Image (cartoon, rainbow, N blue to C red; front, side, top):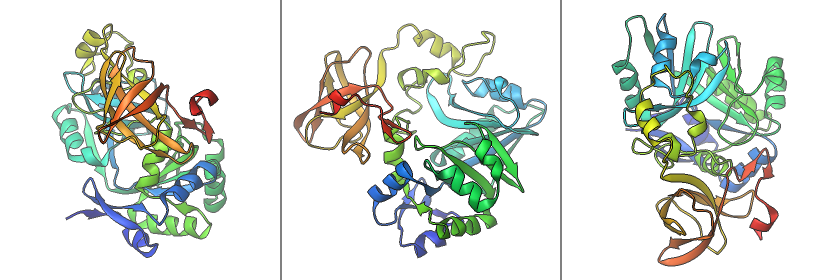
Length: 358
């Protein structure tokens, strides 16, 4: 049976369409996915992301442990700072992507809902003697959009979020508030005790912050060129072919993170790349569609209609060097696609050249 977040009843009362997502009953929309999407792009919206997995890591070996299991360099973090990275297997495949915060007592990792058990087991398998790993059963609410931080500060009285730098967090009465998100817009993600989540959600609702579901979250992240684990990368693909090479910290050379040897072997001969794609003909790009490029075959990893652009966009894994127009097989018909560099939209503005949109 699917689990319920602390906000399940609030979603049902709001008329949300509920679906099973990674073993959780989650709202896919509250009536109009496009309206929810545009509210976040243009103003402010909020998401229940309590299905995400929060893992605290602390003890004398905490930094050494994370320097081994995360490909990015957590050693550069100062207290309350965060970074995005990947956990790899020995073959360089992506076990999961995550955000790591440095806290006053250690580190906090936020990993995906679909990888909860796998990541908890992996962390335990790699554990060290002077290390404690704790799965935190807390709620998480993302408030996103150009008005997000101002509205949140006005509502809660937590003025510190107004001065918060990207990928930093502030603590307030048991809440951890990070200036992070998965939409390509400004905003905060709030981790708080589960019994306090309904009250915050209700206050945000009363203040006119629009709730948004998984559908809008997916189109927002796709427009922002952000990967979805299980589609754009997984255990069989390395970060070097998943547009995540920037999350691999090669220095210092002596840091032997898991998967390093495999990545070093690929480093000078990366066979594929993850690129953005605009569909120039009628139709909608979807995961799994075949792509034919001047350098050979590829595949759509993520695709959808982009409400901010009024066209279909996608991410595609294609042979390295493919850059000319390509063809996408949509239900047996060849449709013209144009490779572009993601993101497609960032902070409410199109990042695609005008000539590409014609």
